Image (cartoon, rainbow, N blue to C red; front, side, top):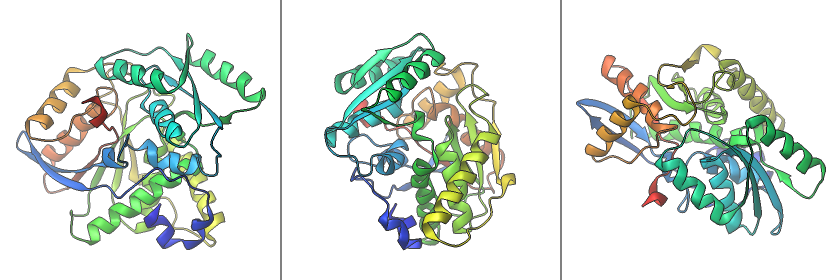
Length: 318
């Protein structure tokens, strides 16, 4: 939020939790002979980082120790893990309702770690998880954290990340990206970045790579969330904000693989190539699939700089 509050000081009045969120570096990598930049948002916090921490900084704002927070997600949800890990550090208790997904080593490791720091209740489906969450919420005594943290308040954290990126461009740390490639799940990161880049005046195109079913990974949903986030920011900051340019958002469906969590050969190969080049590890559900698209676009048009937004923190897996 530092970059956003510096631009709109009135936002300093918003309640925020201290999760140790810091500016994340940009690195240049050459992978299989193709050059591109990576925004290391996996390093957003010292403990468990990744894109979700920027949202939780606001969604946890003002919660006293002892509060129980409730969220939902698939069995290997890194969002739910971030809620549980950072909630524990703040003295919060976390309840998670999960539904089945296609499993792999990272999802199983995530589930094991989450079970150690949260009360996890498996359900049979997405519909059942949300129905049980609704009953739990109307019973009272819990604070609801939406799936992925993808509501307007949470997306403000990603608006700040977009402005942070513009500052790094101005410092000469990377060229102005022609394309920013990010996994598209619940949509909060893509929506916030789209608005943040518009505020900063960067002409960058945001490409969300589908990693969840089409009904969720919807261009319309991302634009609607970006619009709600813009309205919220305008109310708190005062005055008009730059308009959103819908033409700068694209959804790429080519790397999905047909199911949430499904490992793809292309994703595994791209992730392995990055590690061979000395880069960070990627997860099969989100970042590996998005990296396939980022690498291909950088290879096809080397004169149009590509930035890959790394949302997954794999450090804890070691």
